[in-house]
Length: 246
Image 1 (cartoon, rainbow, N blue to C red):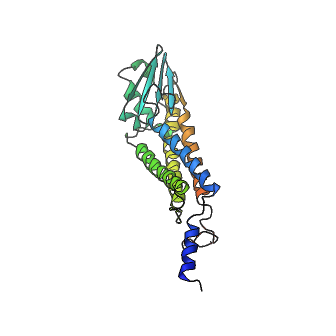
Image 2: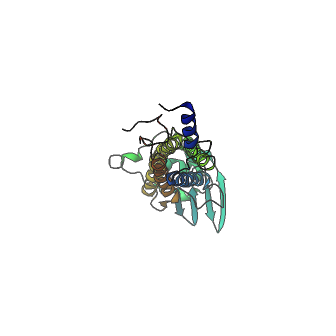
Image 3: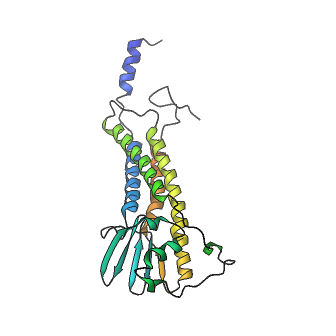
């Protein structure tokens, strides 16, 4: 049986174990996902970030790009951007004409009424907020926690070990929120762009890089959680307490 002094020495040795390469990989991936979601959140509301948008609409010498929190209008080589909470509402095919019709009514003339039996998604629905902003903030909170805990394990490894693998579960929560964001943006923007092209054939609605960036954030947050959780279910960890081998 080990003496208390031996156990104390073993404990002191264990808390000085340097973080493995998996922790560095998880930290880098979490940081990448955090940056991607942050860019999607602030993109589309300023002239500097208007290229990070979810939908672009072109017609009659006017180009409109829509982000999560606002939109930008380019006409005659002049770019005007503004934040507008109305762009967060779905159905998107109703939101866009509502936001732009007062300023650019010529964009939404000659609308076609699709057959609801053939295109059931075009049936009129009440506008509502799918809470994409809330999901984005929760994703950033979880991703930021994974970054902070992973960074503490790298910098302060002599005092901080995170034996409960909280960093990995935070990254996993961020990936779940990213999955929710993917689903919400597909319903709002991908389906909305298709409806706009159907109802207003003289307009050209295309998807922007925001959709791809949200998808990549889902991938990197998931890979980050896999990297962070290496050894979580192993019996060869630095402590006999905690998780057991499955």
